[in-house]
Structures are given as C-alpha cells and as structure tokens.
Amino acid sequence: MRKTLLGAAVLVLALPGCAADAGSPEPGPAAPTAPPPASAAPGGPSADPSAVAGATSGIGGAPAPAGALDGKRQVFFLPRLNDNELPDSVLAVTAAGRIQVTDDYADGALFVPVPKSRGAKERLIKTGALRGGGKPFCLQVSSNGAEPLTVVTAACDTAEPTQLFTFEATGQDGDGQPVYSVRNRDAFLQWHPLDGIGLVAEELGDSRLETTFTLLDQGAARLPKAG
Image (cartoon, rainbow, N blue to C red; front, side, top):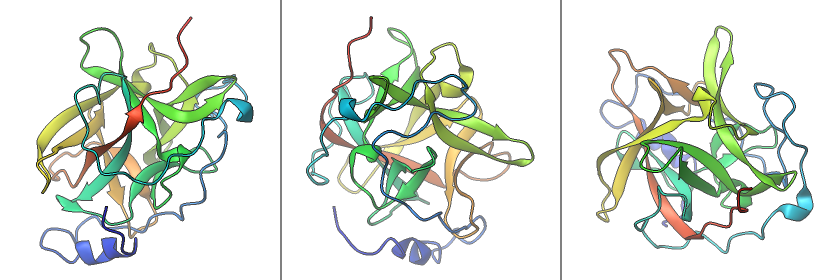
C-alpha cells in the first residue's frame, strides 16, 4: 500500500466531480481494545480485553480471495473517493465505538463480512479482533434524529435490519481487484472528509455514488464458534 498523508484525500476532492459533498474526517484515535456497544443496542455485552486477538502485522498486499464475503477471511476496508484510491485510509472502530476513516491499521480495522444465512446477499459485518464478553461486535447504522445516519458497533443480531449490509461490485481497482459499494437497505456508506461529518450512511437520491471500497485480505477469520 502506498503510504503518503491522509490529507491527500483533500487533493482527491480537487478532481472533477469531487467538490459537491466534501467534508473533514473526525480524527482517528487509536482503536480501543474493546469499544462499547452503541446506544442503539442497549444491554450489549461488556468489553473483554483478554479476548482481543493480537494486532495484525502491517497492511499486507494480498487481494481479497474467494471467501472474503463468506465469513472466512478478515479484511481491511480501503475506501475510494470518486473511484480514486485514498492513501493511508482504512475503516476502523474509534474509541467512541463509531466507524470512521482513519490511518490506524490495527485490530480495530479488521472486519469479517458474514452472510446472514447460507446463500443470503445480506451480511453482518463483524469485528475481526475486537470482542465484548468474548463475542465480536457488529456494525450497525444508527439514527441520530435530524443528523446523518452514522455507523457504530453493537451486539450482533441477525434479526436487526440496521445490521444487514449488501455488497455490490461496481468495477475493479488498478490491480484488477473488485470494488464494492456497501449499503444498508437504501443507505450507502459514504465519506465526507471536509465538512465534519465523516463516514455516514445516506440515501443517494439524485446524487452519485462517491464512496466505494476494496477489501484487502488479512488472513483467515478468527471469529469464535457460534453456540
């Protein structure tokens, strides 16, 4: 992965078509050993630091193999803005339990997309290393009144619609690897790096899809066995 400054995202916005919905990311604090479940999921498990797996060793360079969307592999979500690669940028869990674009390629950036059921298109996105009560957290879209929808961590629940995400291939990156849009129902994960919003889930309406993702393989998933 080419390493420059995260501020290079601002240069990306100078490209044609990038000026409309720009915003500034929230600072990316180091990923917590065990983020609290979101308020949208009261009664979630308490954090269990002893269950957190060891930190990953660097970014690696392997493409997402077959199984990256089948719950078998843990991956980094590398965001792309207007189909341009963003240097030093990865989705990760912040100290507040929110998902943001950061430059912290540690345990908080490891995720495992797991199908809701065999053959299902919808997937839970589980934390690859962070645990609460020995169990992974799941990403969940959280309503904030009149504010934009955010993405947070919560206790996993396959019956919760706001935890079910759909991946749709939109093309390939420069290395020939699949590029995906990620949405919860009609709300797509979009990053606004210059207006203080950061990563949100929003319906596009007449707007174009600006944020997509490549999945960078980080080895076999280490999720605890269900049961």
